[in-house]
Length: 147
Image 1 (tube, rainbow, N blue to C red):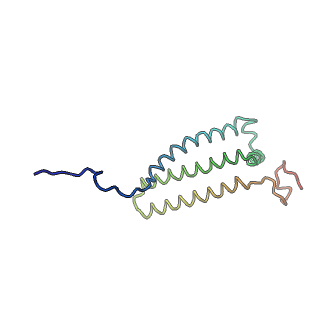
Image 2 (cartoon, rainbow, N blue to C red; image 1 turned 180 degrees about the vertical axis):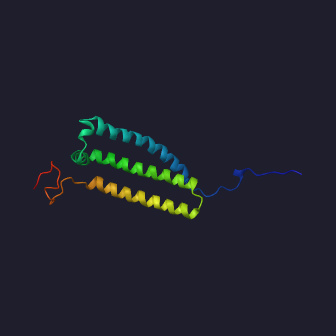
């Protein structure tokens, strides 16, 4: 009597599906490397160039956010960091939360909070105006000209 077992790949191939865990793993590695570059560039430009940490004030931030280069830099930093962190938290939920309903609720909360922070952060980066028109002159920064 001979017993034979079919090899696992001898069956008809299943429909191709996207392997989200693989792409999440790849994203974590790629975004991690890019985040290191972005973070150290951010720290270097803020702390080492010019007067260092003493120069960081409202005017410094206003000036940086008026420059399209720094807007894109900060946008990349914001998006990559929030998605990277949310994906890491999703992985922790997958590993440690055993109740499916709770896991789904936590992942929805993670997605919504990350999406809200990305939306608000992007809005601030591109709409920040340190000298809004019609504002009370006593509340404006010292570098703003009163019109």
